[in-house]
Length: 510
Image (cartoon, rainbow, N blue to C red; front, top):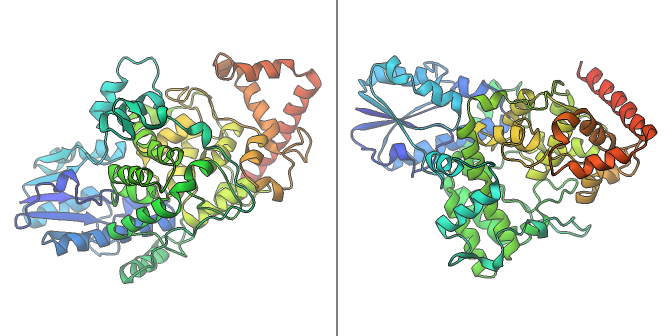
């Protein structure tokens, strides 16, 4: 008898560990375990989402005639770990082999590689072929390259899978429309309501469980409206294509107060747990372009997030672990401020993004990178603490996607393995791409003093503090020339304002 273990982010009927499952001979094991729910203090909504999606997936497998052993979190026999549940099942059912698709986190894969010895039976670890680029293919692509850049990888994926291609050339004559996708949202912009699913009895039961057992975790549990079945996830995809994709390109970098969802797809919840597959999302967007539903800049921008960025980041993760998790190129050492959990800060942009994260277990990529991430970079927060925070608070976060984004894109902690420069910006960027500054006590145009936006002086202080490691970077050399031209009095203002702000930040943390 073979045991097929299905993890909470593997909710796909196309899963490699299920491709040859025999309904009469095999057992499918799914388990809600404390170890996975608490190794970081995951957002309450994330736990509820995954537990409910897992229970619905188990019901669908059972309806197809499979033998499913589902262990609930509050089951008295639950050992609290995946290995404990596998070992318990092996002993109870005389299992002779365990089959599992490789997990998306190094710590878990490293543990699983020793399961065969500990169990005394074969454990087959299969490749996760739900991605369009295997880890071996990525390693082959990366081998011998002086630099790893998304754009080169993205073009290769487009060619390989014939996505938005006219024979050997990209549709529209260019690969990337990113330059066209940086519009500020006008005041009269109408944003459609996001797709919301109504909780059923299974979800309501899970919500009660999470409320009882995870009350100390970060985030708001209610209202809960995430899709928890493949049918609902497909409906979310359809709604995005029809209602949001058309304006996604223009406004994908825009931020508007009290508009958490904007024109983003919000499909990462479902892609990263397996309810949706990447190529089906890509082909849906392609069809929208050919039918005239959405313009090319929007469709290309959305597709680049999936076949470009998502696949690229996963490749970086498996290429670089486990040492990657310890990266700290800029030697950042400041503790995470308390307001990252409460949202209680006078900086309105941070307050908006953190409070929306608390409510929704979601923030779009510019909020994550250029507001929360930018602040984390400029004040020198410790990479491990920042990484754990991002992994904890977002319902679409798994280490394979979160860690490279934080270490490489947000904090430049890997020294530029794939990012060509640190993504640092002053308050002018946030003012240009959002209306957050309108309701902030700080001024984005003031350069110094207590009324100035802290991003303005922290930006220059960051460059000054890290000059030894960053001045030689060709993409920031021009900025350092501007720093060199500042007079001594202006530089002293930067240092003074930064010391004052950082001292207050440290005191509030303490």
